[in-house]
Amino acid sequence: MKRKIVKAVVRWFMKISFRIKMIGKENIPKEGACIICSNHKSYFDPPMLVAFNKRHVNMIAKKDLLKNPIMGWLCKTFGAFLVERDGKDIEAVKQSLKILKNGEILGVFPEGTRNGMAKGEKVKNGAVLMAIKSGAPIVPAGIKGDYKLFRKVTMTYGEPIYYDKSKINQQDKEEIDKLTDELMNTIISLTK
Image 1 (cartoon, rainbow, N blue to C red):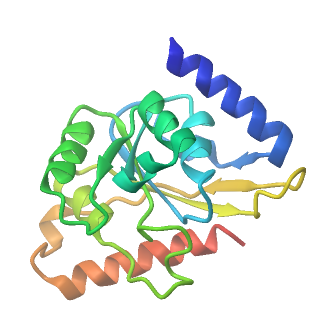
Image 2: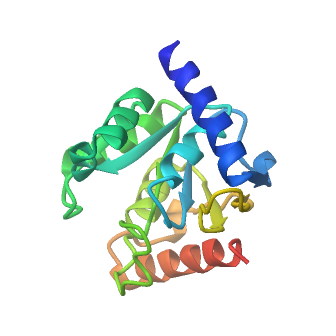
């Protein structure tokens, strides 16, 4: 109940403050597992992704967010699970796969940090690997706008991407990196 109330308050605040517009929400499956992958521009991205979805979105968040009292509280309220920043958190991978096995939604920012690509960070390939292992589709999403007061922020969801496990060599790093780059290019195209 607490989560629903906070979700409604966050949605109301963001609608008024940033004139949030959602495009392509029909691309999110009404049931069953999926991974929503988005670009990452701001601290507002995760709350927006959670608050504007009818289904619950399990967000992966870095443990550093607990240092910020507001973000830490939102992470706990929205049920985000926390991971180490270095990306070698095996428990996080197990938790993610369990969420997908249970037919739930997982929210991931492949950049790994805000504006990761602009900072020259390598895009993380975990989402693609989890999609291949679990059989869950990835729903790419692009966020456009700067979260400036009373200026519009748009989130556009693209069509789900399915990976055929039998045709992909999960041990081939080059192939996984190529699929990850293709995913990120799709996400970027949705921000235009």
